[in-house]
Amino acid sequence: MNKPLSRRRFVKGLLAGSGLTLWLAYTSDGFRVLGAEEIKKADLNDLVLSAWIGITPDDIVTITVSQSEMGQGVYTSIPMIVADELEADWKTVRFRPAPAADEYKNPVWGMQSTGGSTSIRHFHDLLRQAGAAAREMLQEAAARAWGVPRKECAAVNGAVRHSGTGRSLSYGQLAPAASKLPRPKEPPLKDPSKLRFIGQSLPRLDVPEKISGKARFGIDTFIPDMLYASIARPPFFGAQDKSYDPNAAMKIKGVEQVVRIGRGVAVCARSFEAARRGRSALAVQWEGGSQPDLDNALIQKALLEHLKQSRGSRPR
Image 1 (cartoon, rainbow, N blue to C red):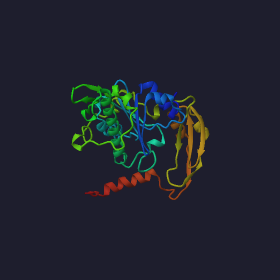
Image 2: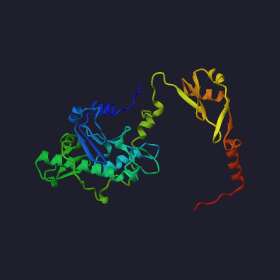
Image 3: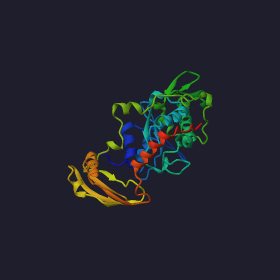
Image 4: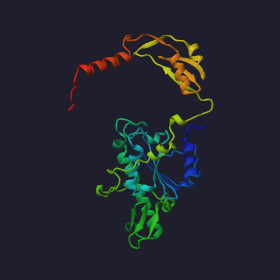
């Protein structure tokens, strides 16, 4: 059974499942940095966690993606932006879909939404600053650990190296100490010539699990006594159902109930196939509407006939 993902469960899952040591959040009111111990001590009911970057002791960098993946590639492009400024090792980068929370609102639209080709345009600057701030904190943590000037420490591919001795510490080793440092107010961004991922074509992070079948989607969610619904909708605007046969639908094995809603009739069943077959059995008759003689079939026919009669036009 899949329970709704509350903030409490989200935080507990991070702690129990990944050994969280650094969790960096960037919101409209600045950065929040919480170490694992701080999260454990916090009142999880009141804790507002808007995480973009997680680093675990095994050096895995998990980047939370606020946008919905609909084939456009945000599960890879958003981690690329953050990881580039973070100076992460791409082999260690993972992604995590964001839960529903105010902290993941689109900074321009003021709502949590995906569309209009805005994911990169609206989040680009915010994500680069989040990655840059984490990089600066990790470098500062290394400098303090070695007792050397900060300028002698540089983040390189998932680790911080000391220019004077060549020694290095991985991000996983530095994350606990980095999580306790104050955030930089204006973290310096990389010079464009130093960017390693942005502008490149990298393997998509979400493809392997989709190929293997491990990726989970809404259709994979099951709860006890769950029903599926299939709705018969009118074929033209403004129409209402004049009549339908609920008894015919109820005869389909698995159909539990027929419910009339607004402009449509819903069939609820134990499986989608049963709901679909029950909807077909309704034999709904429609009436009213602005153009009762116009339906999808007539529109399709008209379009096909027009294609036969016209050579079309070139847009450019």
